Length: 317
Image (cartoon, rainbow, N blue to C red):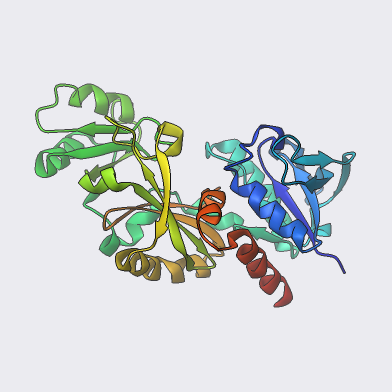
């Protein structure tokens, strides 16, 4: 029987053809003659406890002017699909959580969700990294401005950032004597009502914020270093950084070894580790990117490896 794989994503009409990792996954699935089904989060619903959705048959192409076609939408049970890629981009808000509840109803009845719904909810992309302190720089998670100031006094040059941001948004670097420290902390913590993260600044950011892609706990041997633009401390591509594919270092591999077993245990099949210098800074579990940039630079089929992982998981059930 043909494998049926669904994808929940933001509008496919608006993806960046040359960069979108979900598109790369869909090309790899279609290359195996798997049937593709497209959904946006608003298409999902629960009816008498059954996970259902308005889905459209999807065909994808490697054509920058016309990269997809959709069939007519129809309603079906999500359990009719063998696997579903949950690729909705953050923000990780209540609507995202509600989508995982619906997908989890299908998951309980045997549909493979990539990544596992419970782990998507449980593994905040910044806080999850702190479960591996041996890999991280000095870090503090708190809403207490006095404690956050003490951290900055101890470490001097620090980064403050929200726990729910993406693309480098609302990230502040504070150096000793910065007169804006109070207003930065007031803004980020909402006067002590919101928990944030403080991290010692890592000077090696000038060499790039490395995105290491992990498939079922194993690293792809190449990463994407996102190098900040001049005068910028954020390497995020959304903040103007430049992508530079490169091989993993020995330290990168060690960090991947530390984190990998937990990813496998949690059903986090496709994950992006963010590493600056020698330190793990974040673990991206929602919709990691970087596939196309790495595949163009090196002879590696990342999308295909993920589909191999999904096929093996389905075969083991």
